[in-house]
Length: 126
Image 1 (cartoon, helix red, strand yellow):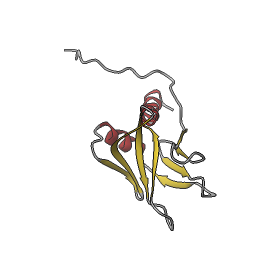
Image 2 (cartoon, rainbow, N blue to C red):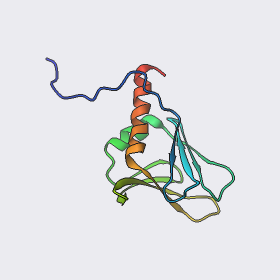
Image 3 (cartoon, rainbow, N blue to C red):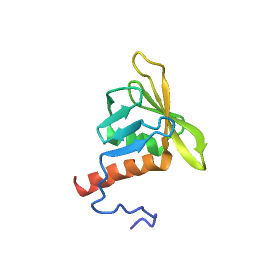
Image 4 (cartoon, rainbow, N blue to C red):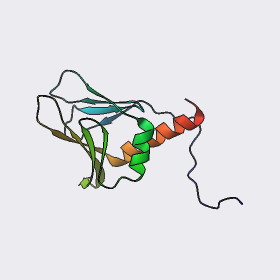
């Protein structure tokens, strides 16, 4: 028997990896995301901070995101209801070496789209 559940179709050939997401609270800062790494660049740092992540695990955890996700040491994704100008934001808390901790804000829907692109790329074999 075929399931009648509505399934979201992934567009063939959708690959937008790597993606850069701007931070709204650090205008020259950004988050560069692939399915294996997360790079974070702050305006007051010369080099990017690099974190190794597990893309498939992050996607799985993001589906049931209720409180927080720790994709790697020093990084937490917080499930705070933060809205900025009518746009829902994702709060990413970073523990920087030799600096104060920082909470970066990125567009929640843009972040979800990046994860969707990771899955689509895996489906079409990139």
